[in-house]
Every structure is written in C-alpha cells, then in structure tokens.
Length: 235
Image 1: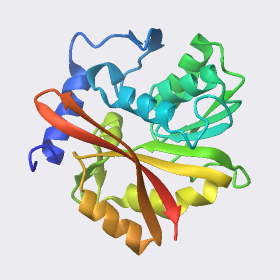
Image 2: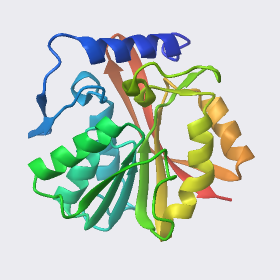
Image 3: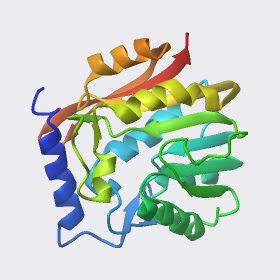
Image 4: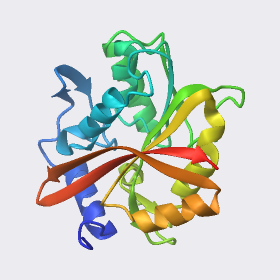
C-alpha cells in the first residue's frame, strides 16, 4: 500500500504520460473523440476519469449528468464537464489551475457542440469564481496523492497528480459546501493512492463530514486501486 501512495511513483507516472513519444493529439473515450493538449492530464493513460463518469452517472441522489448545474474543479481535458452537458446539464462551469487545461476544456466543448453550456475558467479551486454562483453539484476528481508540504511543481501536469501537504484538499473541504444550492451536493473523488486518514483528519478540522456514496476497485497498471466517492457535508 505504501508504494501505491508514493508521491515519487505518481510523479514518475505523470512524467511518462507527459513525455511518451506516442502521446496523441486526440483520443477516444466512451465512444467520443477528445482533444488532448500538452501539459494536460491524459485520461487515455489512466482509468480514473472513466471511474469519475461512472460515479456521477450512478449517484442516484444527484441528477447528473441528466440535468441541473455542475461545477467541476480540475476539469483537465473537459471530459466530465462536456459529458455532463451532453447528457442534459444546462449550466456547467469547468475550473482548472492549469491554463492549458482551461483551453483543452474549451476545445472539447466546441468539438462536441456544447460551448453555450460549458464555461471554462482559470482558477485555483474556487478563487476566481463569481462569488454569487451556486451549483447543484460541485465535483472534484482530486490530485489525491499526498506530497511533502515543501514540494514545488516542476510541470503544470503535476498539479493533477499530487497535492503538497494536502493544502488544496483542506481548502476544498472547507469551501466546497458553500458553493452548492440548498439541496446540492459537494462531491470528492478520492482513492487509495491518497492518505484517507489525513483526509478524514482534515475534514474534522474544517468542520466537515465525509459520507461515502460509491466505491470502485480497479486495476491501474500493476496496482489494485480503490476509488471512493465522498459527499462533503457541513456538520
């Protein structure tokens, strides 16, 4: 389990995905073609994005991706945001700290004809969002691998893989429920590559409760990885 959680291994995975010579400009997932820009997390090399789509499609208490509004944190290529719009969400805001990911989401929204319902914004979590907006669903497929507090990113894509000191996770737990509509849900896609004990401690410290809503166990390369969907609830 310790190796699965190793931030060094995750950074190596990031570097391989970023630099491999056969990295495509477009790829296919769930029967659709998607653009992939440099320095953006490549869903074609990891099963985790497909797990996110399964989580959201099977979460019975939230009408995603069938209707309502969605805020996606860490949109990457925009697969989740665009799929939600294609399946019926009438308003989608896709946020990412990586400017290339913001552009990538815009490209895929145009490719699939949903630019009118998917808006992409460059933001560190919620920092650049209009303060008055609220959403039926707030969703983050997090960078759940814990890196040391002093770690500094060397390439933009690394932001999608590791979180130094879980600083971003602490902020998400504290802030996410504030961005939901009265009956909305703040959802966090986490995995056994992360440190669940630390996540639960941060939830306690921020006055939040983690309610497990779904679970998948998959093979990811040589690893057996448990993926978890939590709802972040204000105590």
